Image (tube, rainbow, N blue to C red):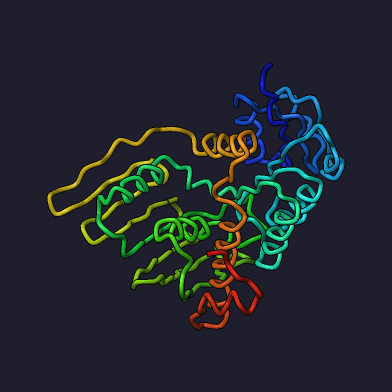
Length: 329
């Protein structure tokens, strides 16, 4: 007797939701059973293209559907928490695109709902599944550059017109916030940020200094002002430097003896991410990144905005206490 496929609905059929449908439709052990979008014509077009029978405009019509195991949420950020909580409350597993929520209060509500439901929550920090990041993390774990001390991350380029409900911090900087957390293996100690809104309603440029324990730090630069798109990160360690190019998926390791580029397996990050989500449901294992990882990233992003507004250093533990948050050990 064969194993039943994981039945998934995609909520939001815009640019990124279409990609979810495309990849999920190709995965073994997965069946896309419905597509939901507020634009009926768009939902219908995507369903026709990928041969999904059911399409609709109101996600609430799926919440109590017993034929559904899980959803992926690809809607605007301000709706992430509300949609996720509704599905968790009815016993559905959820993958939420980043950011997990548009602010810390909503992120806490998602964490509470996940605890109550016992369902799995995965947050779509897709750079974790970038093959260059995966290779760099293996090199770090193998001690290729000794102990990591400093991160410099840069994500710059023109404004992505599809983004309108959050600024550059929650949309763009949050990628490197999450990666710094991964590299150093712990939440930050302090955050200081400068930036502002030059030509957009939300903040469109920021430079952040984040400190971690043992004197480690990350400097993260993001903007929606630069004509050419760049995505790069440098990790400096006690014995060398790892340079990552996210767009070309290249890794370069620089040491006193010279530099070299290890082979990077070229796989689509979204495919790897969604494979892990489906696997976590089918095998009953905890997905990574989960709701706690998502909460930390949103909390740091909110602390960045607070630092920008007040022009002061935000001490992360104090910031969490003020919001009644106690992270698990």
